Length: 247
Image (cartoon, rainbow, N blue to C red; front, side):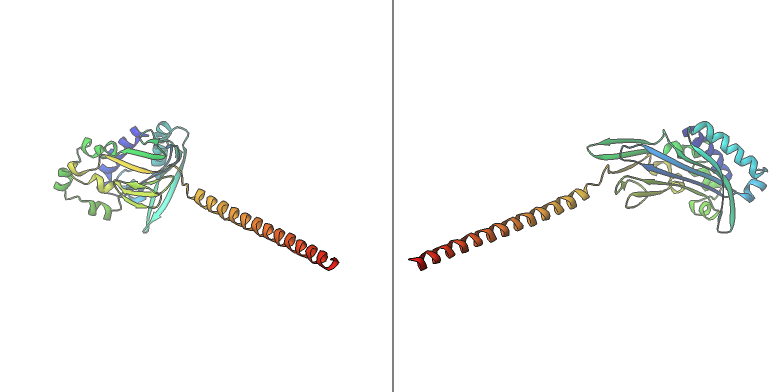
């Protein structure tokens, strides 16, 4: 997976400067820190035809071959999507495990680290560093406007915190294209995301229910005891009255 991502991003970003590309990664992390990763990579149909000088089937076949070698046990299939009236062709790899993404669990906290430099370095290694892009008048805004998307979404077991991206409950969304386009000294080298391994809130509810049930039980027992004592007292009073009458 790591090698494929590096090659693909180097190629894709070079070509994306004059065309449209969608690269989406969805990572799901469980309470043990293990991840399953879905990857979707697509080029616009027009880009495939006019810039790659290739057919949709050839591109799909090439992607499938690359993914099959780098993503063991992944379910790989062709995908076709339309965004804002533009048709995209590519492949989707589902339920693979990314060795690049590391997860550990300590003291009930899941911590995931993702080395962004493994992806962003593809810019530099291909000669497309920030200064080169600036000289060619390419900016994050211009690439985004051209339809280029390089994004990652990470879903944690519980409410997440992250040093980059936007967080909504368990999910962190990261615009990798924006990170890539930053000057090297301002890029995040490693994405760090944490969350609790488990949500124990339900235990408080269970404890509350048990507490209420215990209180009700005690109240019922006390009422029965009071009723029994009242009955005994009434019987004793009745016996006393009977004895007085007999006397």
